[in-house]
Image: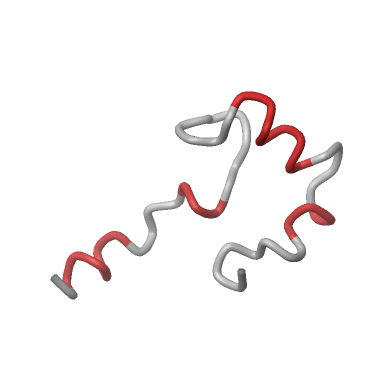
Length: 49
C-alpha cells in the first residue's frame, strides 16, 4: 500500500480514480499514470536474481 500510495492516490487524483481503472482496466494504459506500471525498480530487481 505504501509503495503504490494506494491509500492517498484517489484523493490526489480527481474524478473517480478507481472508477477510471475499472472502466477499461489498467494494464498498459497511457492515459492514466498508475504507480504499479512504473519500471523504475526493474534494474534493482534484476540484480537480486
